Length: 181
Image 1 (spheres, helix red, strand yellow):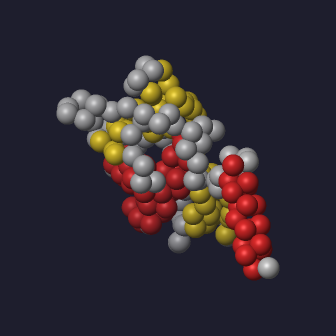
Image 2: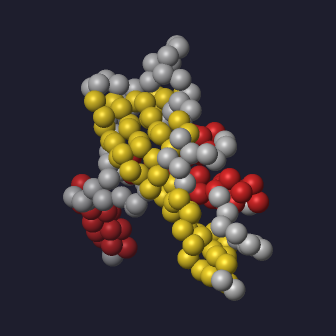
């Protein structure tokens, strides 16, 4: 009796693996061609007035790709490692929108990062994925706000805010590229 139950469970498991629908958990898929193993992520271009935004966001995206464990990330397109794909990102100025007022002064803001992104397949010589208006937003509380802060002041006062925004941006961008959304 036990052998027949075990055999039935194994048969159902085998059947399910053969007929699976191909869905994966969000953030875990990979629709890239199998030949993409080396990805160049050169320093992003910073068109905002926020210093070091390009450094922080580039590092976050490189780390996110590496955390997926399937790719080797290089920082340049030339040299000994010829990349299979190149990620180009142009960071636009950050947008701050007040969303909560305390005593007539904004105390909470939504910060939106916008970027022009192209993920180029170097074998096919065409974009695999592109989004000229890729966006990531997050909300931040400003302690002791007296005037509308600029993004530089916000991130100088709260370095965790920049880290959080860059990690969320990186996770969302890499997932979008890998799942071809």
